[in-house]
Length: 236
Ligand SMILES: Nc1ncnc2c1ncn2[C@@H]1O[C@H](COP(=O)(O)OP(=O)(O)O)[C@@H](O)[C@H]1O
Ligand SMILES: [Mg+2]
Image (tube, rainbow, N blue to C red; front, side, top):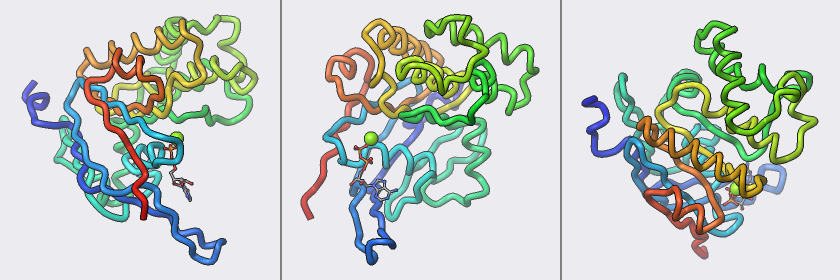
């Protein structure tokens, strides 16, 4: 329990990232700059702001898909020493992703011919869960998210946008994590599915998981977020 009493789970300070476009003669494009926020266990922090402001890039930088240019991302782990995700060695990253940090990307990215059930069970199998048990949990989660059983054996690449997004969410949250990043998790969902997803996120909060999610809809932010951070593009 003591691990939950820390002041913060994640602390982002003076974080910045720009991109050098080598195929455009080295032009630099600002991703985001001077981003500051902190997040506790069991809290959901909403990032919002105009398109192109750098929201997705911030999540990718926390997940270490992108490497920060400046600033720090201190991640307070439950059973391990604190780590700065802006500067920790690349060799730590895979392990952090398997066991501690989850990412629900904006669009589902999986190989063709992998069934929805296998795609969702995979993160559990990857950490050593028995295959039958992993599939049972995947069935429950897909059912909870309103995916019909007849679809379980099919490739989600043939599903509608909203169904794909629900498979993507199931895959991103099924394995135990300490921090989950979600890039517009409700963007392609109708109201009913959005409500189901928000309820699931609320259950994760009850389990003390910290989350950062990008939302555009102010009502959803009011409904689910404990903290809201506006990301704006500063003129340079
Ligand atoms: N891999 C990349 N290479 C070059 N520029 C990028 C890359 N990723 C993001 N950007 C740029 O960073 C800025 C912020 O993008 P993004 O993080 O996707 O914004 P948002 O999610 O807020 O709409 C944009 O100008 C975008 O073109
Ligand atoms: Mg984005």
